[in-house]
Image (tube, rainbow, N blue to C red; front, side, top):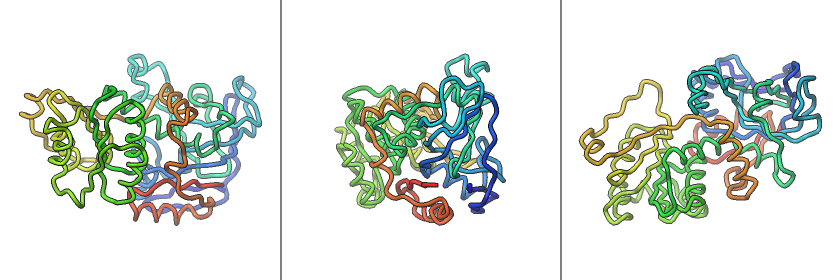
Length: 341
């Protein structure tokens, strides 16, 4: 059984053949697949420009057991617990040779985590698949794909111990930013809508929590929390034009904004050019991850800096995936569900 996406909100869990593998591939029995905000967007829109074109197998955050290894696989064997990323770069194109593997011109994506079995293509086996340490659960291991994106986003901002950092948006990704920014030694301000989100942010270590319901002018609230100066780093983890604009107005002179939340296609944002120029504000955006960041994410989970228990609040069988997706679509920002095939 596997989940197949046919179009906008058209998802069916149906019988499919167990994948066949070639010389460099792995066949993996999925033990845990985590829901993701990207999957919810793909379910709503019916496609992803770079990752998935229906009809197609669905899902990309997984961990499981190797059932069979191709004859050319030397690193792994049947019976081992592994976590595989959802992509692998070519290592030969313009971007790969310039330390930007996430922008690879031939980035190989792999989907099909919401299934009993998944084929891991040879390139991903070779470059972006890892043994799960004995002390980690399958759900902990499956968390490393989104976590790797967050780690890369933080690195891109150049955050340092003692920095003031604000996170706008407290879904699972925003909460990962809160936690890892605290691990990096930052003073963290967290902005969210729901009381439960704010409470989770506090448990993750946020020093200040700001409710968008209680504070209509969140920019002023952030500046008040930094003696009027503004934060060193602003992370936008919502993906709306208005919060992109707010993020720019929250940083100090010389500060850095990371537009992590992707807005819908064809969205345009107006920014104050005078503010950007005379305050020397750096604006960056982060997309995806690299194998190096996947390894860093696995190290962070292995060290206990972050766990699936912080983000996964329920388990469901594969047969219930359609209901899970509909629920997540109507409850934007809710936590992750572990799908257990």
